[in-house]
Amino acid sequence: MAVPHLGPIAGVIVIGLLLGGCGGNKACRSSTVYKEGDNVPDIRIPDGLSQPDTSEALPIPVPSASAAVQGEEGYCLETPPKYFERPGAVAGSPEALIDRWAEAWSNKDAQQLFSFYTDDFQPTEGTLEEWRSARIRQLADPEPVRVSIESLSMSPAPGGQMQVQFVQRFESSSNSFAIRRELLMVRLDNNWFIAEERVTDVL
Image (tube, rainbow, N blue to C red; front, side, top):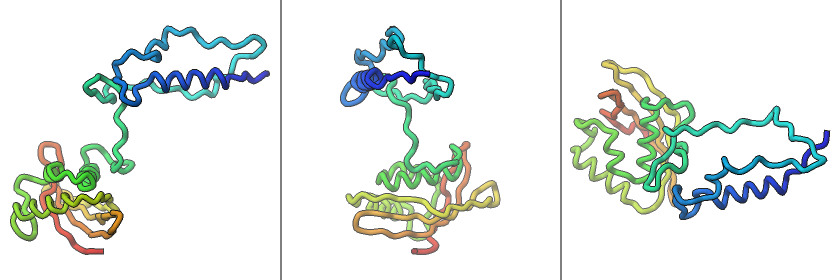
C-alpha cells in the first residue's frame, strides 16, 4: 500500500493553527481563523495516493469546560499543572498543603504563607507578631529562591491530627542549605492547617 505524502499539507495546517491561536497579545475572543475549522472541508487526498491508516492514531481528548481558565477575555487555556505539586498528592491532603506552602515560600508570598496556619498558631520561640515579622523579612529578600520539600513522612496523631516531618531545601544563586522541620497539622472545616511548627535540625 502506498504511503501518502502529507508533509506540506500538515505543515500548512500547523502554521495556520499557530498563527490563529491565543498566543502573544491576542485575546481569546478575537476573530481567529482556527475557530471556523469545523466549517472547512476535509483534506482531500491527491489522486493516486491511498487513504492514511488511522487504526493506530491517538485520539485527541475533548477538553472539559471545568478545567479551562476564565480570564477577562473568556476561556482560553486549560490550567497548567502546579510546578510544586508532587505526583500522587491528593487534593486537600496534608501533602498537597505542604506543596502549596513550599510554593508560597518560593513566590515570597507572605500572606499566602500565613494562610496555611491556624488562627491560634503559636511559634516555639517569641510571639506570633515577632514570628510574622521575621518571616516577612525573610521573604522580602529580593534574591530569587527555590524552596523544595524532600523526605516527607506523615503519621497520625491523637485527635485526628497529623504529624509531618520533611527536609525543606532552600536554593538560590548565592546560597544553598536545608533544614529539617516537624509540623503538627489539624483539620478544620475539611481543610488542613499548621497548628505547630519547629525546626529539628540544620543540615
